[in-house]
Image (cartoon, rainbow over all chains, first blue to last red):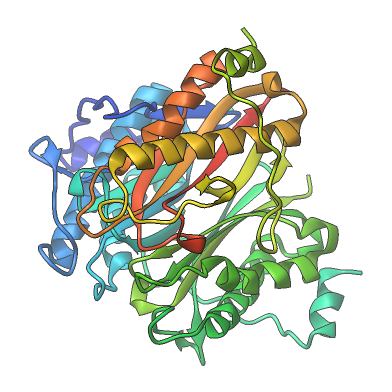
Length: 152
Length: 152
Length: 152
């Protein structure tokens, strides 16, 4: 089953790609690897502001991470032109805007990892690092970047 | 001298690989590069909880980082099947769970870097970024991920 | 126009490469990719100490990031021998030593991104993740690492 069918089955529409808010580009391909810039969590088009363990619960953080995964897919789609050309999601770095006492970054990150796993089938399982950061640009609650492998 | 002889000489036994606590995999290979997921510090099989500059000293952090390096080696071994096929440790990212005043992340990270340098000989010298994070999953004191190059 | 002409036009002299303060190396090449270790902000040869949103303004942070970009270029130059062999700046990770309320990490990071864009022409546009960290080694205000692609 193609990634597009998997998206459709879940009622997910690929959103428009947002232009970076600063002096960088959304994606760069080098050889078979494609690097995607850090994407921040958004709600109704604006940064989803808040800190885990303070203003936001783990469940909300997980939902935010899932939303970022959808935006990362939009960027991948615009980069490669065909999501079925992605042979592997290689690596996710999940930055969770965390109060000093919050220690469930791995559960927040699952919001992105689980969706990518469902959508990309055999290409979905990926390595990951998730951790708590002091802040994220615009005060957003989560930021994620990604490395993927493209078919030769 | 092989990596296995170097391990033996230091009395280090390769531990069992722990299954990830969330929706990701321990390693992914793409071309000659192998990406290893973030591994957290453990003590007696449980997360080694604490913050540098607060509950833990630099020396304890360094010991924790060394322990993670051993776990990363176990994951590399399970990924490649033969540690002597690793042609280069390419990159380490060392996340130190830090109180706002703690600034010796580089000394903590040396616990991992020095062991990898001793064990892998010419393949050991690597690039590195180490920094202080607000928290680590499970409250662990250190988290490290790694990129290595495998012989063609 | 070559990178060297662009540096000259801006009056930038490539500084000497500083030896790492710990057990790692400044750069590792694997295939066409070159990984550069995290470089910290310096002022008059010493760590530029301070936290954004506390001791330092966004403008100062941006200046610090620009200074790191110059040091990263020095390391790239020493790694490759000829900056015009860099076919692409692939990825920047920009760590901003941030007070809990500081949310302009992307503006700080622009100090490095804009300079690299100006100097490297078509090879300059890169992916990026910037975020706020709890601390940086030596208390430095910014740390940046980099991945670049070298011509085959």
